[in-house]
Length: 459
Image (cartoon, rainbow, N blue to C red; front, side, top):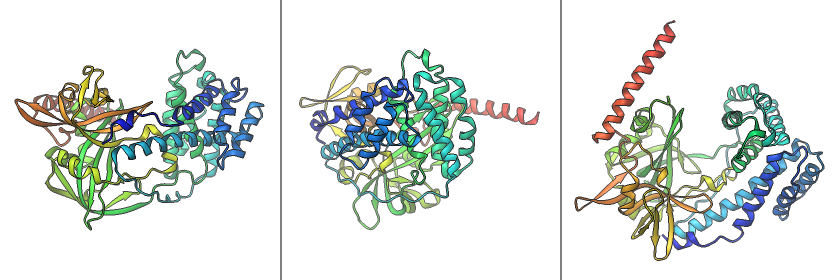
């Protein structure tokens, strides 16, 4: 792992991000009567050498004159996504160079099922109205106009991806109304959601990755746990070794469940376990033997318990030292090329420390790598203190204005003995006192909620 490459500047990266920021400033005040025309010109110039050039130049000109239609807004959204895609590719290329691991080949996606063109047009119309008003111009009437469209989209399985995006986007905007009173506007985030939504309203844009099947051994590396007040997700990162001896590859297995906001910490595992038997294997430190398991071209396992059974004991750090360096990284679908989505598993050792548990940095012969200790979930024994005293680390390299490390597991010394501590150690159950206490509290909370729900249903 060449950590020094992660600290070297990437040519053209700052300029590309400046183009996006300039366009996002235009979206703040709105595209109906844009006050910051320079952002439109810079976006058109950034894609001048691409197939988008003519369309975006026309869209920028029409928008600056206040005469743009929805088709012009689609062109601007496409240009913004293309610029961010170039940032993603530059960052990923640097990661490939730093890790020395090969990148998989792209494959064509599968055409979506029959879509409802009228619903796509309605969604595009609402997004266009948002862009005209700008983030400073949003109000409850504008946001509530999306409710009927989103309800209709949610009823169509082929449009669920767009529906979920718009549902969350509308809820976030509603919580921020009126826009004129906002002290701080998350311009880049809202620009991301708007531009992605606009492209998903194009017929065929929501093509799903090609799906195949795999047979072989799955060696888990770690679990990334994401928690929201109403939902939780576990994403397992692993190395897959094909039965036929082909090159190992990096894969992921995901499970997302709704949750009440009273269940937090280790109790979340109770909600996730029934949907992903892999979590139990991780808690037991085992591999999984897969037979005909569906997998997308982007490396996402479409988990089916009938295609998996527990395998032999497997140590994550042995996997990280031996199998991870040879594993192929999956390619990324064109519409998903955004640097914030990058999460590349790495193994690090021989580092020093700077800072404290709240602002920790790993040092490597003059190079520095920021550690995101705030991403460590409370639903496991891994703590910032353990990371700050570790000798080896399995983590995810992410990018947010620079490369950062999210720890998934560390090796540390406990009573003069090297011990592995995993963020997902409690995934399959635990005898740890803190974990047992948290699980019991979650069980009690779930029982109370079920009893209350039963009461309401009986009325």
